[in-house]
Image 1 (spheres, rainbow, N blue to C red):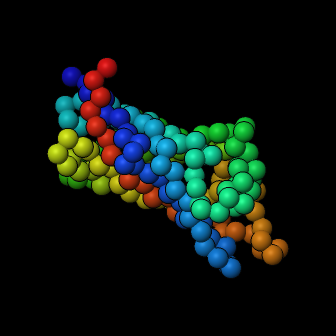
Image 2: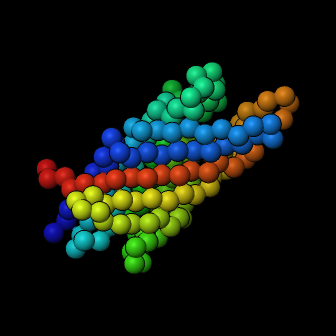
Length: 162
């Protein structure tokens, strides 16, 4: 029997870490949405999304500029979808599609997968290159930011009965 787990937005987040030769910065979204479909206590399908505008770096000027660079009005969400999930002990091997800035790329990552009381916890990280999503890298003092962003996530999921 299929079971739906939903992301608990109150306790989950997706964060990014970006870098420029002069400084590093990060931002976090606490407005993550998503579901995992379970069959026989095993994850089978996953869909996770967050609004680009929900990421907060604690610098309103930087965040406003990021929304311009990322064309957030045209491409308001970042999402990940997979039906290719392999459970290996307390790890999930995920092979899916990351969609950002109107471009979808294949993404493979490994995340920890643990049950704590009535909550499943999915936690991991991966790196992406903004240029692969047709994003023009912003410059500061005539030097572009590094073409690498580290994504970290912690998603707490609970059973949802429709």
